[in-house]
Length: 162
Figure 1 (spheres, rainbow, N blue to C red):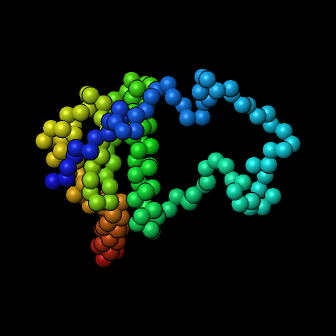
Figure 2: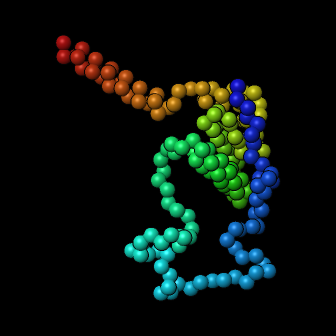
Figure 3: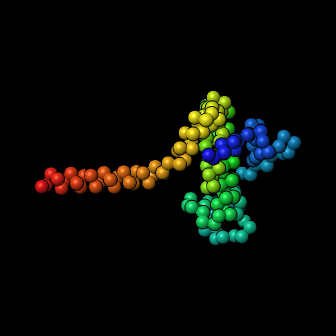
């Protein structure tokens, strides 16, 4: 049985303050607001690639990352991001949230609001999660189901033709 105790704690080492916004200026610092002008060439793709000139986030293709090290780093960062989003969603809207993230190695990470906590702490909930993880992928099951339905239709047509 997998360990389901890797819960997300928003007050943990990566504490998130609801009043902190990383791009907002601090109260003691003057805010610098740039007005759009002729010298703004960040959005201009015709200027070519300028090394060191890029600011902001780069677009990446959403595809499987072959390099195990890069894949693990991406998993860790994105897991933290989605956990933070789940916490923010529940805090801002008062909704009940249950988030399960399962790593490649089978470790289960959870974020739950108090009402949904029993789903991941009680044995029945743990068993349900484990049975879902042990089941074959639903995509594979759908492919097999569709091919089986196709074979059944062929057999029915051949029986009708005889």
